[in-house]
Image (cartoon, rainbow, N blue to C red; front, side, top):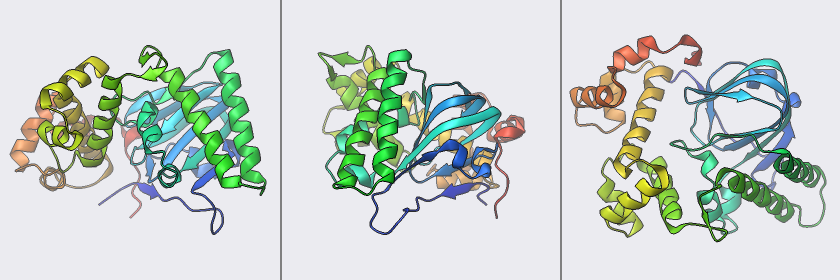
Length: 295
């Protein structure tokens, strides 16, 4: 049984774009309580005040003024707030970009990646000022029903994501553009995020990307520092951890959900990758990471 909330995007009004921006301090109080949950949509938190820790898939990032936190669809997160958090929360669905042919931009922004993504940015003063300006304009466009409102919102959101990726990708650019290796790796990671549960072989991803396994492996290794196979296994392990902690399912049931041949093979795989058996991981993980039952 699933033990955590899965939040769906709810449009503010009929016909509105799949986008919303609000002040963090205006969010329901439960949203900032230490209760693990996940969304079907993308979320960005621009924190201007406050302190504590933001947990994303078992990893904690310090909450600092002028920090930008990213949560992708399906990622499990929660807040452990020490001082009141203020700022902005930005929510959107991928449809906002797909409708306007911006799939590549969404793929190139690495901060939303489950595996080896940078989930928080702490920009220097100049970068923080740029983000503040963009977020302020986003809020203005969202709150005012003016000509071409949806296109303007998308334009400012594009700028926010571009600025974020520039801050995150220092050293990854070649002549102001993302390198071919990095772009291929990003596309691979997108496919892994979408298909890791059903497709466990790197060969399948190479075929989908129309490249050889050797070329894909070399590109991923150069861009990420780990092999394509390791990245895929990391994603499978993360999903297994989520299910072990946030559901009551047995290891047998989890093995079936993850398309392993049998529970014993899943157990050997999990222990090889984590040095723990599934049972040990479930019992040893600190209780604050465990979702409260919702059903």
